[in-house]
Image 1: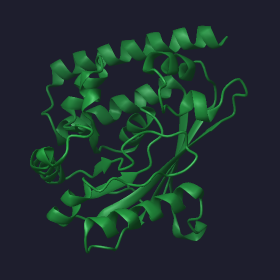
Image 2 (image 1 turned 60 degrees about the horizontal axis):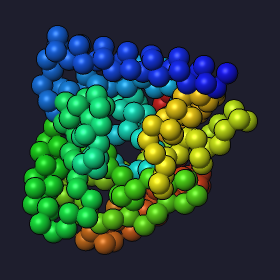
Image 3 (image 1 turned 90 degrees about the vertical axis):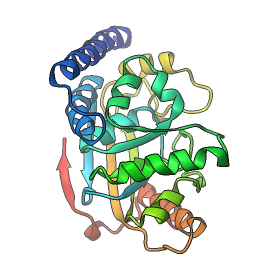
Length: 256
């Protein structure tokens, strides 16, 4: 049954991506914030076809920067399904078939891993433009995906832009769970290490009852420098991810 389910879903996902391309050429939304709003609706459809049910806890961000832990390529689809964001992604994503083209239309800021200080001016300029879009800008400062065992130390580079632009910084945490006994969250939902994209996607699409919970926390107060800011942000994301946020301090926004 998993093989049949995977085949059926992948046909529907490809069909949706092709339909999105056609819709783009018909509507012609501008690249950037307008594109992010447009892609929001398509991400909701894609996540539904993939078979992920999601629940959002906390107040949705409306502007500024948002940082989150990072578990899978699925994270970007889920956050974009919740509300329009300007995303920050590794430069390799731009080359992914169809998906890379669509993310570019949404004004995604692409960052080259290990680019070093020579890339900072261009990245900071792109981030400043993203903040001016009027949408919240989401990035994953772990710099890689994980199996969910812990929140890795945050890379500090992108926190430069938060301080330079003086924008508020919110935290978020994403958790997956799985009722399907034939798979595991660590290997079949989280995408990390040396796992190849195509085989992992095939396994993911074969699963039933994949669930996600996105928790939005408050604003990180430390504003002195990027070292302090990144560490405070990591601590806050780690607390959200571990579920230590006091229940009375969060509001259930929507559940699916």
